[in-house]
Image 1 (cartoon, rainbow, N blue to C red):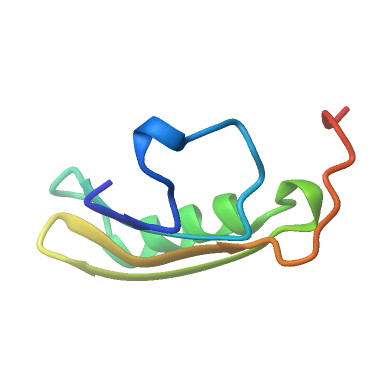
Image 2: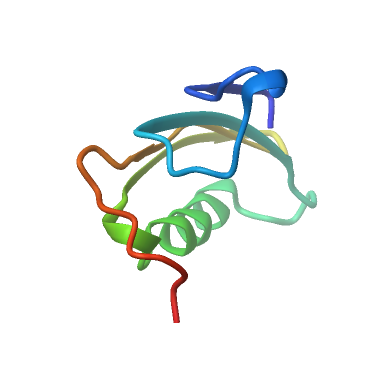
Length: 86
């Protein structure tokens, strides 16, 4: 993770569902890996069945062995936290 928006400072952080988070990720890929295929697999994994009705949006840009995920955004506006998932 190379950046994040929406997180509280460590001193006031807690285990709660936040209304909106954004992350920037950077992943090193093996030389033979196709960045577009890796981005597609990561997008499918992250966007599939997120908990508590959260909406996840994934955007990426790949090049020269790096996968830059410039926009991993999770939005949970007005979502009621029902407790642990089963």
